Amino acid sequence: MSVKLKITLWYTIVIMILSGVVLTVITSIGEDMLERDISGRITRTVDDFSRRITAPPSRGGTPRLNFYEQGVHMAVYSGDHELTEGSIPFDLDEEPKFEDGALRTIEQDGDKYYVYTKALRGRGSDGYWLMGVVSVSDESYALRSAARTNVIFTLILIIIASAGGYFILRRALSPVKKITAAAREISEGSDLSKRIRIGAGTDEIHELANTFDAMLDKIEQTVEREKQFTSDASHELRTPVAVVLSECEYMTDCAKTPEEFRESAYSIKDQAERMAKLISELLIISRMDRNTIKTEFEEVDISELLTFVCDEQEEIQQSDITLIRQIPDGIRANADRFLLARLFINLISNAYSYGNPGGHVAVTLTETADTVTTAVEDDGIGINEEDLPKIWERFYQADPSRTSGGNMGLGLSMVKWIAACHGGEVTVESEPGRGSTFTFTMPKDAS
Image 1 (tube, rainbow, N blue to C red):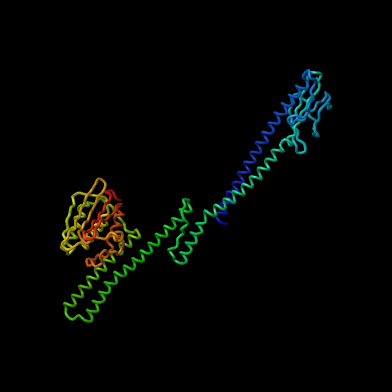
Image 2: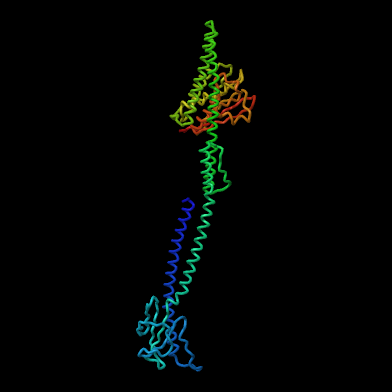
């Protein structure tokens, strides 16, 4: 049984139960009100009639009496209970008791009757009795008819509501079929480009379908990024492996002198170090993707850490680029020392890689009451505006020719991840031919 049919049956049953309860209550209240009306009406009518028949005659003579008024059948009985005037059109097996002002009910053959007796006095009527009778069954005929009509109309309305509800549910749940079909096609054919695309809408089903599309977009992007990542990693490893193999062949087949062997060995060593660095960075990125890097936040002297990184980079970088520092003492923040050092290293080494010979790299550290900001500025080749969004992608290089320093296009993707880990952000401003400025801002109480 489908969900829409289950829901339709459920609220149909609920509506039927509620309608039955309401109709029962209304009928019960109606019957109670009817009997209250009958009891009041029979007493008023008989009392009024008794006053009229015992009243002194007027000048116009005695008016003709109507023994049926307001639905009450009336008759006059003698002292020995013999009918003298009027009539009672009901064959009552039980003889009513003649008591003055007595209102009784008689049930006979499934019918119910109200009987009211009144002793007549005055104008020669002493000893006579006036009786009024009302059939509840006759009076409740209209009520029963109305109840039957209500039941019929209620059933019709329930059928219409159920059919309309089923139609609305079918329309509302139709995207679920599309979601199921899309998921099935993806699982069977691995086509991640499949989308629901049910159009605009603000209900929960539209929100589910749009969320499903967004999820597929993210999955497709992730898969494509992983494919590109694998391809780029393979390409980056292919070059040093080829060099190592080539140098090994040269050593075994061509090298004759110690100098030639030494030169090949140094070349193999350089390529091996490059592969080791690449593999290390790939392992870090893999751990980043799996969120398995354990972070240890503690109070860190940012000024001291950044100064240490600058000293190290000045020693490592074999370049005539001048490193300018503007690092005040005593700036502290809650951070992961290892990850923050990696961020500084990547930004500064990146500035060296793309700086111009004889140029400058400026490292600036500032703070506010709540944040710490590090800026790394170079006056190198800069980045084209259309390339700025791409620099955070793995293996992207603004100038592939400048990779001799070990820059493989993985540093900035790490920088972005580390910044996010610290609850901060990293931005870039660049102009081709005039250099770039990378700015990292983080809260002091990051954790």
